Length: 86
Image (tube, rainbow, N blue to C red):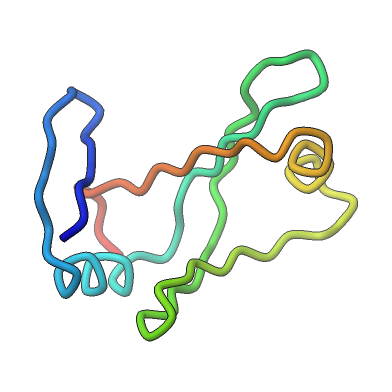
């Protein structure tokens, strides 16, 4: 069982099967990284989900701001809209 925390502080309980279906039905997410000044840098990005391995795959060029921020400080945050259509 996975716990997903909503923006309003509510907690949704989802079975692994529901999480798989949810992630497979979405095309993009918002990736937040920490920029060189210590502030948030939030970018929409496409992803692919491998339900067999339970992995999210995100690709971005090495020279992108996202990659530079992650190389500098590996802490990231991810948000996937539950209300948007895939």
